[in-house]
Picture 1: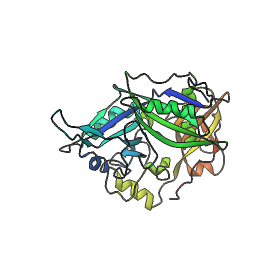
Picture 2: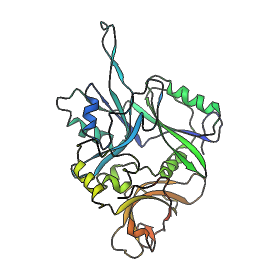
Picture 3: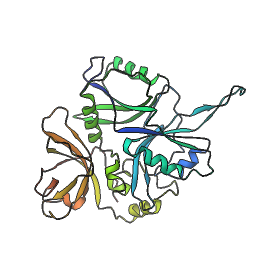
Picture 4: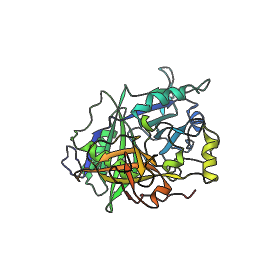
Length: 339
């Protein structure tokens, strides 16, 4: 794996040019987001400044759907409340502040969409693309204290928002991953060229999907395993598309799932690229969600694909056409909830 300035070969730190962040801040932010997202935000604990939001308790995976139940975005959401009050206020109060780590190409779209529903709520939604940069930090769990100190130093910098993602296990070695949003004028750690490739590959291996502009409104959440990733709360009440999502869950209508695969291929594979089954060349059986080159194996591309379940039963699945490069599927790193 790529490494940082501490010369430890098992860590990587890199700018994530394809990521951005949205803030949702205000006294009504909890109730506002509760009525908009696939997952509940009420139990997300506040993360103190200079701390890292931990999975589930302080951050979680969520999505935003259209009225037809199709995902317009997926993201990691964390909470770090902000102080309010002026010079004449003795006891400074705080107000809820949520941060959504999202694909950059959807940040403006989602911020605009959420703003349409603010109405009289005391909430302000901002696309932070122009004011914040997003970084990824990854380290194997057996890392030295130097790597931990390096991460802690970054998180302690003014204005940095940090969230820990679920670890990725490869050959029984766990790698922890962190997202960091930092003000654009903030000087962060030293970066190596190969770190981005390592980070992107780990994202593929996590089997946690990230919606981009190319896959905008292509999937009901269960088609990319969001219920199995605890990205949907079926008890929280209404949100856009909730009836469609619930119907898909309880009527067992999901016939497509997110899978992880690899193929012999060295050229870029873009999200939205179609895949085909060998026995049905006339129509695609799914599409690419994300793709990344393997950081250590030449001519190998690893992909997340949304695919018809029946296409996995026999024959073979190929990129681009029924005669294109063949996909070799791997086991998912988490159990699927049967629908």
